[in-house]
Picture 1 (cartoon, rainbow, N blue to C red):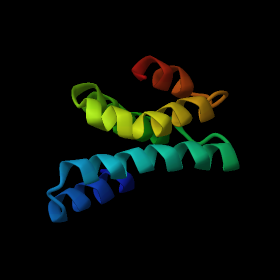
Picture 2: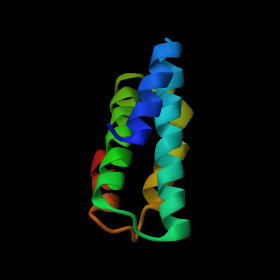
Picture 3: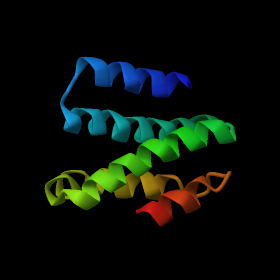
Picture 4: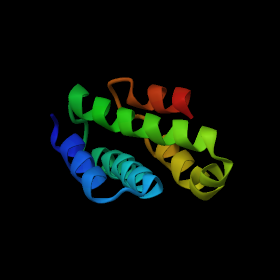
Length: 97
């Protein structure tokens, strides 16, 4: 299990609030995108982890309009800020969004 999945899994055990768990996943996607823009390309496994968490957030906001309204700006910023990142990362985020 990757470190980020371990952290998210551990958080899920201590916090039963589904929205807070999604908030953590959204924050992880924001940090992953920012980190890549600051330090350059990482590896495919890293991007797969970020994409998995981003996917979970997108599915949730698709199902709950209130969450979409709350997080749409942050989600679209992740997509925008991922432009130019390799490994198909940006393309995946665009498709998901």
